[in-house]
Each structure stands twice: as C-alpha cells, then as structure tokens.
Image (cartoon, rainbow, N blue to C red; front, top):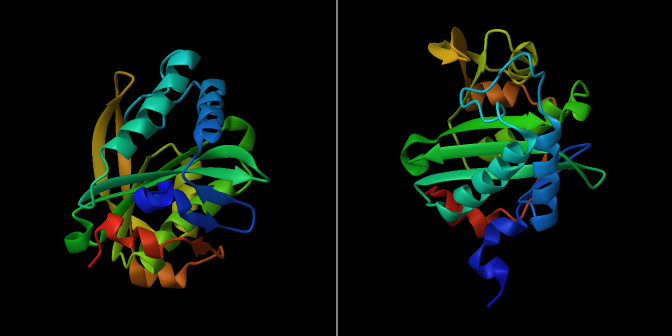
Length: 215
C-alpha cells in the first residue's frame, strides 16, 4: 500500500509563474523551520494574533515543525488545515495555509501565510495567496474566502486589495500588551473571478477531494 493511497494530499501541487506550493517533505519542512528561526518580520512589530514569533529562534523553528505535524495528525474532512511550502527555483521561501470547518455546508475558507524576511517585497505573497484562492474557488467550489490583517500591516492589506477582498468589519485584540485593530476581509467567488492577476495550475486534486469534504 503506497503513501499516495493513504495520504493523497502528498500529490497535490499548485503552481504560479514563480512558485510551486505543496506539502513539505521532511527536508523542506526543516528548511521552513530554519527560515522561521532566521525571522519572518520586523521584530519591532507583531503581525500575528498568535504571537508565535515572540520566542527564541530555536523555539520558533520547533514550533513550525510541531504546528505542521499537529495539522496533519488532526486532519478531518469537516475540520482541516492545509499548510503548503512555497518553493522558488527549488528553495523554500515561505508557507501558505488554507483552512475550513464544515466546508461542505459553509463553503468558506480562511487563509494565512508568511515569507522569510529575505523574500519580502518581491510580490511572492500575492502569488501564494492567489494559488490558495484558486484551489478554494476553482478546485473546491468555495463561495467565500476570509482573511485579516492588523491596521498597520500594509503589505498584507495590499495583497488583499490586489486580489479583490472587501472590508468585513473589525476585531479588537491585545498585541504585546496593547490594543490593536484587526481588519477582517472577505472575498466572494464572484469578486475572485473579476480579480485573478496570477495564473495558477493545480495537479493531483481529484484524489484529494474527499479529504476536503465537498459534496
């Protein structure tokens, strides 16, 4: 019995003009952990609601490994989180996540991502998110995709703007002991069809469909 027959997600591939996104093999996951240890944002700010980067580099690396292992182990068709590594010319540059609960009923996904600091400012975040949205809307038949960013996270908000998201309210959080406003964002399938700046290819999805819960 092969790995692919038991874990078809291992064969899922998303491609953009510069990137390939897939589940990481052990070496790629180790490279992603090292990337996290080197830093994923300016230490003066905290862009994440869960402040997983506010620890020592070794803890960040270990946390990345444990997070991916936990998501794999807890996968269920009605509650899943797919975390893909993004590779540029074979080099791991970051990770793109897409997740849902009760997807067969709600047809809604949420996304999140990060890039190693050396890879910021090159438009790769847009390609990564575009790939996840193509999987959600074209591949799985989603109706909505949601995301969010703090009001001072101009880069993330710019990516959302390019891809057609609209404002969906705010949330108030405490970040490093201070109040912070999270801007919620929502993209409908109709808006997605109008804002597709990046061509995306999908391979290996048919075998995975039962794992995502669509009917």
